[in-house]
Image (cartoon, rainbow, N blue to C red; front, side, top):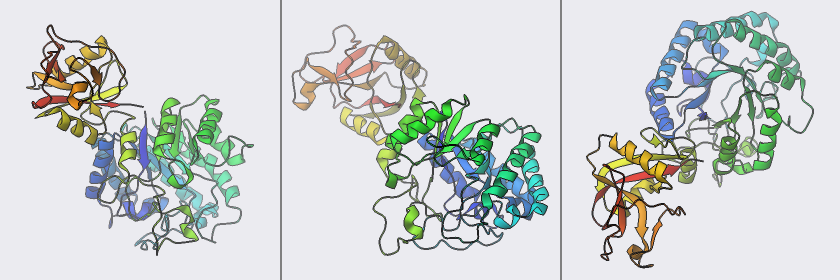
Length: 462
């Protein structure tokens, strides 16, 4: 499953500041993408800009190539956005202004800007940008795809009064050409442009017809509750193409990881939320901050973004949900169950092992059947571990003063009745209340929960 965030590094207020030579910071990008990799993310949606190409085409492409190299290092395939109709319509190359206090996305810039969009004499410049950019990377397997124009019929947003009154007419003239320019250089990556307004419950606009007719992969935005988000997906399924949601997650309107991400998983679509790390874009402030900046008081809940500036989670529960979409680096995906496992070679008591597993977003492992038991035993035996056995989550209730030594259960709540005790086990000695799985043969033995042993953690995927 494709899962990730819209990515703007913390040091940048917009696309220009991210990639301009004076501010491009690959070290910080590398650090932030390592955080994404550790969450199990495998894509990032990244916005480019025509003025970066106009300023220095060769240098811009070199920096983009450097960025792609770091993405590849972290097993992330970015979705690259070529044009964007949102926010400031008067972009300027050079030093960007500081964030406006308490305001959401106060420095984001449109591409092309209003001057280029309304001046057909600049279209050859835009054509050269698209063809050279896509053509240079047309066979680059590090790229997931090309989002040729973000929310093309968006009026702009914010408090700008310099958007052309007939902006959508210009967009509808140019958008098909942009698709054609990109496709003319035969990229191996698919093209898309996201629908973002009603579409599922109202007649399609001209822009939406263009997007649906020209996109190889259908993408959309949905800051909705579960019911509306589901209806958007169901409407788009009739086009029989892969689907990616390239923007969701605005906590203040009920679009959250815990309720929306599982919907995407159930429908097998890609899921890319807005905002990764708290930074100069300030998208943790609500949309209404343009009218009422959050200067004296902070919002009661972040609007977007997953991590704080230092990489710590804004809400640990959300990170746990994200990590249940796919296995994190270093974890083993079960061949028979929708789970991930990780063997920890350090020895711990059972209580400390459970704490360690929960810190990693899981629990000590439970086992449901013979196939899973064999899969785990095979994984452990191939891990070059010195552990003769590993603690699993099968515990006698007597360990917690809740029953006798013959009353065992899965501590994580698994209702499976499967067991694989070795002969003579469990030992009824009033102290051997925990179970360990043998690396040699996969059979279980009972032992004291206070004896430090290697342990196996699991995360249940959603």
